[in-house]
Image (tube, rainbow, N blue to C red; front, side, top):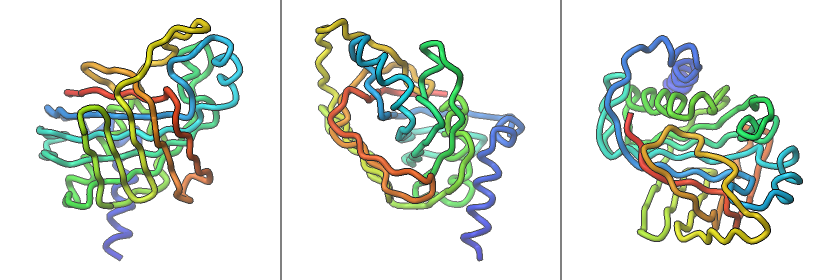
Length: 221
């Protein structure tokens, strides 16, 4: 019963209206990584064929080093969002309409109830609303490990491994087509060696490894 009430409260707080009305934000900083089911660095021919057919899913993860959001301290805590859209999530950057999205959010199980709510609100705001309609919030053990050359994220039905050492070979006119989904201080592109969501909440599952489909960087807000 208590768990159900907590999930309901988290979903309500994570709605765009609730985040907007929360008012105070705070000062929070940390690390971020994402991967989507579309190349972010590729040639025009591949992008032209992919733009309307792929890129509808993504995993976003924020690890807070220090700070607070909405007055709640979040030092050392992590939040992960698995997102499904009705079209390429970045198509608005290349002239298309904005995608309608649904998400399953995983909050650090070390966080108390107030911290879990703040993590969800932070993810919604830093993703510039991409988190969209939240259909499930799950408290779970979350791994977010930066190994220097790569970043590993694991949370319940999510697995993400990003290689930071991506080739920027411009063969066939390859170029950067998109930008990170999250507000960041600095970002770089990477290769998603593993990018998987196996949950049932979104009505879709995906595994999209070995693509230049990732961004990583730092945030402060």
